Amino acid sequence: MPHMVFITSLLLLLIPFTLGLVVPHDDQQLTTRGSTSFSQVVEYLDAHNVIRRGHATDDLTWSWTLANMASTWADKCLFTPSHGVLSDKLSYGENMVAATGDFSPTAAVQTFVSDESAYDPANPTYNHFTQVVWKGTTEVGCSFAKCSNIFDSSQGEATFHVCFYNPPGNVVGEALDNVQL
Image 1 (cartoon, rainbow, N blue to C red):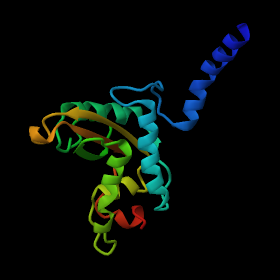
Image 2: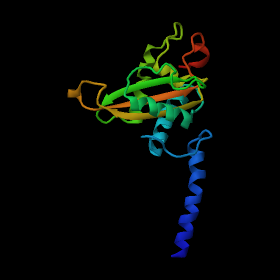
Image 3: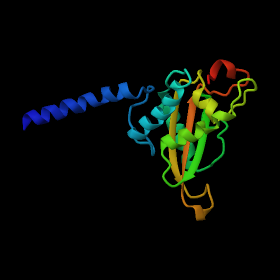
């Protein structure tokens, strides 16, 4: 029995180091906050990074600062841009989407990039897709909330996903340097 306790204790000591390698993080403690679980953090990151790799763009790292801001906004259940009001020290880009039923972080990110076909390098427009693949963006933080006020009550409760990005993408005049098809 003592052998088992030692192994469990050793594993518990190693978990923070393992998690730090899987999900890069900023200077805040590596714990889940708000409604975002560790598995959802991994899911948000994986969904973003799979798409970014397909567009010759480096992987994003997770930011708990951005995730906390996203949680604050999602909890308001306001399906409208935040316009940067959550931080006077950090500018950020944002993507938001809501749907009823089972709407996972992966499905949310796939919805963000569903407007890829609308992007024309000869006449760049900025949309959800361009923010996801923006080369200059290095961090993401996301969260979600269950909201009863986004859609008509007959449609049921919505899952409202919010992702914030740093540095922000979709900078006018910089698309050709930051978006690869």
